Length: 406
Image 1 (cartoon, rainbow, N blue to C red):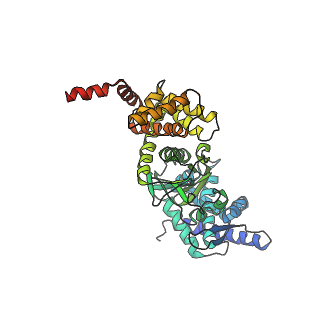
Image 2: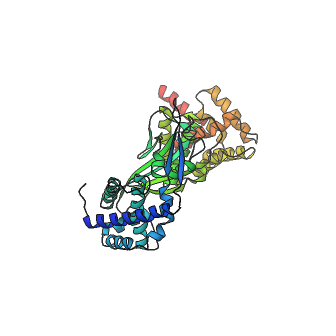
Image 3: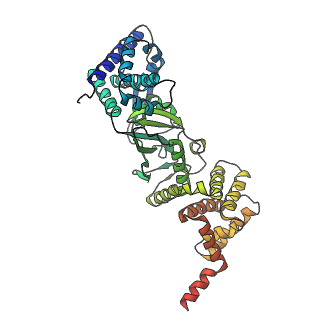
């Protein structure tokens, strides 16, 4: 690689070399480098086991002492002379007490960790440093930044990668992909992740950012994706409990997933087929309609809360969801919306009428609430849909068809 800033390269290399000497000496004096023990389960084959040194936590615990060294001061002075470094630090660190602290944590400590992880400890390797520095410099002087957030997802599986929206997908997790950036990730995954058929996928959000553009609200966006998948499939989908963020392919943070999305409902896991994937895409796109429609927002909230409640509170939430969504005549409107034949409409109306009278929700009634929400979102205009259903109930459509036929 052609080095863009030879002086910066020299000072950062000196800092990392000095830190390796100090940290190596602490190990010789009795400190221990912690390790994570990872099991990689292979379908149809034996499990593979791997020890990973937890370099990040070891370095971060001693970062305060390293900051007092002269080589750290020289490297910081060089970074302060580089305008691109300040932009990089703001993007990677967010608000900090001072610019120097941001530069130290996001550039010096991050480069040190990347180099040590590539070395597997504190035995210096020039190739490992040059590779880590090349990645840093490409990010430091780049005009744009690549952001990604990944969260494990359970209760659903896919055969191939499924795009849910622009830059948002569900796919199978690659072996060790999280541990490569976050060696401590194994303890943050759902129980049995990677071992069971409905526990091997991830939700991934990717965005290109301008140099000073803020990262997206990943917890909110992934939570919407979970809601859309629950609506489209009726599967017990949940994500998290945490999501892992990268910026320019460097670890950026670990954040909790929103509780409503991180809690797994009851139900049978399922596979996301092409038809339901398309429904999920449409529903996810239309969830934004709830921002301007309080009744739709209430219906969605009540339905999703019902997934985690016992009776009689579950049935009360389902009644409230349909009442908010379709108004006082919700039993009739939902039956007309969902039923394809007179017999099917009568059956649906009977189960919904029982729910409306205070009885506990039958499985058919509970599923009708979910399907009604899906059809309402797919229509794109809830009020127009209500007018259309009322026309159907009053026979106006049939009259219009007869008039045209005559």
